[in-house]
Length: 435
Ligand SMILES: *Cc1c(COP(=O)(O)O)cnc(C)c1O
Image (cartoon, rainbow, N blue to C red; front, top):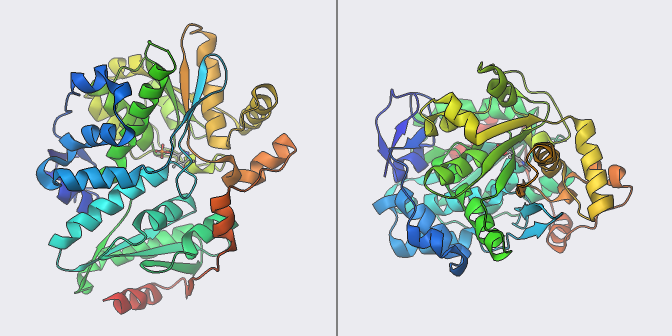
């Protein structure tokens, strides 16, 4: 499979190059040259496939000859070696729980897949690969755990001191080995600025190859299709034989875009709902057909606080910019923090199910949709464990959430981070030591 840039000013590349470079030089996004149709055998017999077998079938056309079969099988097996259950909440609402991975959020799957691909490709790059990433919280943990122990790859994570939650900090700083945490005396923007400068001066580093673990990387984006296939499989096992409505908490729109790609390749889906918080660029676009990026506003579902969703161009690409066709398949809803809190409370009290703020935005969006589509059945993607956002959730339900055992172990481990000032030279000195 070849990939072209959505800006169409850069050369086509194969999967390996797209995964290693991350972003095309013209600052577009890589997009598959064709959308491979799904095998009828897979769709007709999906309940008989294991999750790993489904994942293999889905990724194979996208990785092509760049990864051999045995290696791809191993990569997908390791990527999804934790449960992804579909849990009924009401008669016609299910929750696909994507938070059973090591950092309790759905980004684990993409990060684990990408890290293993880079590890596989590293044998052809005669330099040490250094993944450099700035994090405001969740991405860093997923990347750290995804790349932990991957040979020939070092990971350097910059995080703003005092500005990530204590659980998030432990997820970044307790692994050791090939994972290096730099605690920056500055803000997230400062961290990001330093990372940008390192990339612009990458030529200075002779023996290391710098790359990012950005969420626009095809190796993080494409495996998110798995969720929709797994959900579809479990949905059928539950006796439902009509395609579901998927509701996806959306920020950068990578996750929902992967679902729409799966649909374009043949997965039966009734409809997609992009569930947004107050950051409503896409809901507004679908109403007015004018795409107006905004400055992000802070909400309690903070992983979705994005004012200019980078993956939205990929959704337009799937539909060849045909907006009426897109509107036929996609709705978008904006939910306030007040509605989010109310939804967490009501669903907890009425249905005995605890949502995190991101899942609650999805749940509230789906409920609105079902008011006028009463015969449909919906699946929300529950993207994070509620304990990750206990400071929001606990006061709403007036109860405490027990820490899962895996998190308790993480929290008990000793933090190891290198303190640096907000000066590029300090990052540079650290990188040179890795050479
Ligand atoms: C990243 C994230 C999202 C948003 O996903 P996108 O693919 O950026 O739309 C939603 N929920 C949680 C918990 C996240 O970490």
